[in-house]
Image (cartoon, rainbow, N blue to C red; front, side):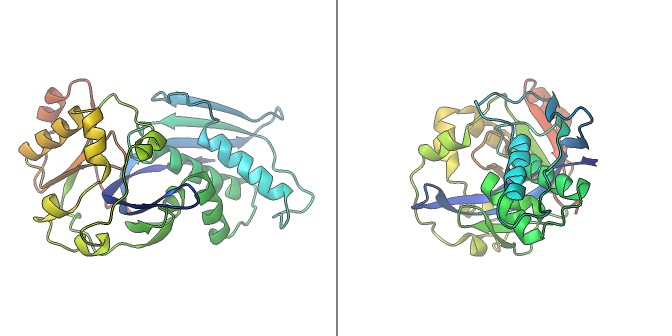
Length: 287
């Protein structure tokens, strides 16, 4: 069975506090983007769970891939109290992941892959796991994983796992360009460098402002921190605005920078300006 995990961008990102559980409290608007990985899962005829990754390389971090973590999490759920199929063990599987979403870019590819892994396993083995329980498991894999069970833009609070539909956004007639430099940014290390603060206004209010004001009020708290480490992030943002973007921002903790254009963006020109970067033309309203 095949699924197509999609990417996301963050509209604004406020880091508002350090939580007692070790996470940070945030508020952000998560928007689905038409950029997809390809995930195939089939029952293993040889009795051994294996994973094969093609496409973009995933830098090693000493941990199993999130798809394997999702499989192991579900195995643990089935072995514990309240199992979905009593006295039944989750069968081994073969996993093939083709990466199109750049890792370490703030586009949520790993979280999306993990969530779609849960969805595929649920379908393949007819586990009949409820949407609520799936969301709970997804949140244990990553703070933004549960977003990929939703459809459309979501306002995320808590540690990013409390979701409700975002206010209407002025994006449908805009073209989206994403520029990804060859930099992998570790989310945990990025959070370790940031100082939480109270935002000037709640994000659910800011997002309702005219898009002409977004450049002054819609902020990603990670940008000042990451731009000090990697000044080219700020350079990409400046070039996108000079090229006609009405709003540009870093997504999540980086390294991807996106821009919204009211008219067709100069993709060819941008590819010349960023010859060693990924320059992606995508949509935000494909649901």
